[in-house]
Length: 142
Image (cartoon, rainbow, N blue to C red):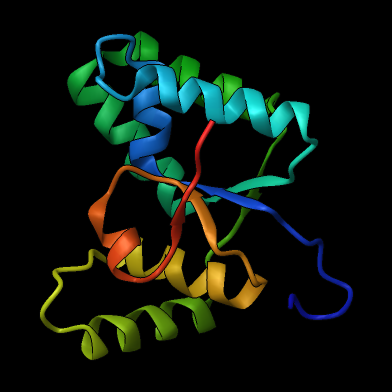
């Protein structure tokens, strides 16, 4: 349950989810688009983090080029995806997660995402990253 006074969220979007939704050649493109369509139809409250935005922009810049990476940032700013900023407490929790799960190879961005999802009481993500499943997070379906 999210802390009182906080906006409750339903669905987290990870870098892999954004990338699959944007890249039409990605094998998971149709599924990722279907998740966004379902989220809109069901009025799900979708969010991501500033760390994921930075990671997604960097990935798009390298793989798809500057125009696509810039368009991602512009589209995100006018979308229904809320931005939750990683706090110092989330960062500390991320380090604790990395220490606890020493056999998984969780990235700092992934661990911070897990910490925020835990803090907000969200257990579903649009992510194709196996680390989310390893942490016990349900993969969103379209």
